[in-house]
Amino acid sequence: MACIKGVNRSASVALAPNAPYMTAGTMAGAVDLSFSSSANLEIFKFDFQSDDRELPLVGECPSSERFNRLAWGKNESGSNEFSLGLITGGLVDGSIDLWNPLNLIRDVCDTTSITELGLKLDGFRLYIARDLAGKSEPLPAIASPHVGFFRRSRTIKGKRTPPSCKESDASGEVIKILREDGDSVGYGDALIALLPSFPGVP
Image (cartoon, rainbow, N blue to C red; front, side, top):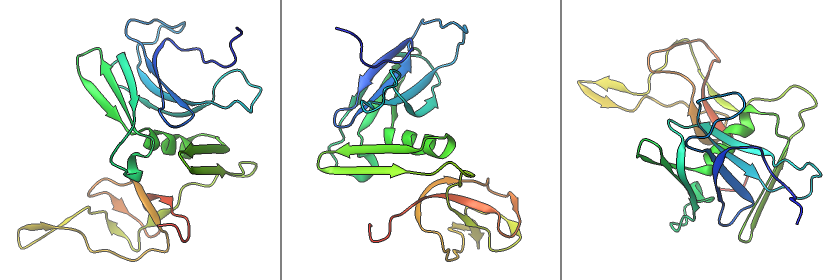
């Protein structure tokens, strides 16, 4: 039988249990044409509507070591934070690492030119499309309301407490803090990147 889809990688692979994705981790002892010694964890989407033979890359991150084994399992907790389950990797140095595939897919959507992303999980289906014909829009962010220094916490009478909060027009899930503690900031500088929330959806 002829191969219908594929990707050129020397990798350990695992399939998502309830979604059309495959993960690939750079295989231990493998040598590619560039003789690279790097290690990566990648997520590919099964897109059978496209005529392109190669699977599209929808998520990736570097790994500290190459992979001996790789598995993708369900998350039985019911938490939306781990709705795509967890990826587990047995690495060359003997350690076992865990990744949240949902976070990897979110990260690559913000940093690449992916225009469409579909997710089907049990009875839930999500389809996202964006127009990249013009200038790509960055993720919304909470901006600095004044000039000063960014503080993740403050000390009052010798006790460490959360910083004072300001209301923001932006809403969503915090996915990245863009400043280090003590960084100088100007008025309007982006402080915290958000994954936008959908109106009416908690």
